Amino acid sequence: MARIIVVTSGKGGVGKTTTSAAIAMGLAKKGHKTAVIDFDVGLRNLDLIMGCERRVVYDFINVINGEASLNQALIKDKNCNLLYILAASQTRDKDALSQEGVGKVLDELSRDFKYIICDSPAGIEKGAHLAMYFADDAFVVTNPEVSSVRDSDRMLGILSSKSRRAEENKEPIKEYLLLTRYSPERVKLGEMLSVDDVQEILSLHLLGVIPESKSVLNASNSGIPVILDEKSDAGQAYVDIVARYLGENKPHRFIDDKKGFFGKLFGGK
Amino acid sequence: MSLLDYFKTSKTSSASLAKERLQILVAHERVSQSQPMYLPQLQQELLDVIQKYVHVDKDAISVKFEQDGNQETLELNIMLPDDQTKRF
Image (cartoon, rainbow over all chains, first blue to last red):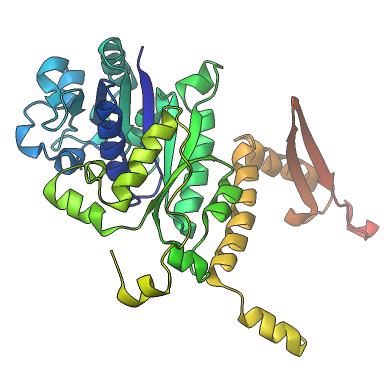
């Protein structure tokens, strides 16, 4: 049986797809067969972030509608042979997704895969609902900023009431906080909510902090998940997050402003 | 406001302001989300019935829903007007 992880946030632009791509790659690199599914029907982007946009022939909706088999639609990642991508349809709208159809695809994937990552669209409409409905774990991606924190709290309410686990009275979805675009310098100056502030408001288990980093845009420019940029702070932060999720004990990094006087003087990345 | 307060408030960071605003907002939204969907309608219908007999304002009635463990309580509070002549 696979473990189904939804990457969600409510608010758009906080780093859901970046996180989905990085986490999926990280789990696959650790030797677990992983599939990552784009639930953003009509506005697909995961294929671009994963660098497989030119290899999409069949998509998630084709599989749901029986126009293609799962094997035909799954795209094998070029960097890791244990990672597969299921793209969203770019031409259909979100109504093409049905709970029954999504459930069937996830069931079929569960037989063969260890982890299934569901990259949720922004908002609280159908695509977002279905991305989280079947989940076992939820990665709540949040920026240290008021609207993102508020939307995350709203998503937590929905996760606990409108999921399969909630409806079947099973053990609730395990929720984790991923704080992205964090800037320790600005936190120190009192210009940004700190990790502690966000945790206090959302009372969530912190899986990791991803610092604001130039490497994220560089990675998306080239279509390579940022986790493969091992020299970058954001890449390392995602490596840590995957390790923590798998039960390894990794101390949190990138929370404090480590740059000393000289570092500030001469800049850095 | 004392002089000391003036210096204190001028030092309040935008982050702590954000935290304060969020804490209030999130607490409020969690309460309204945990309430049953029928609550606003129930409140309106109760008000209609009461207004048949007593002149009360819209604000004179409050319906509170509270959840404490397995126990759910619905608290209804009606403020009757002081002026008895207003009765039918």
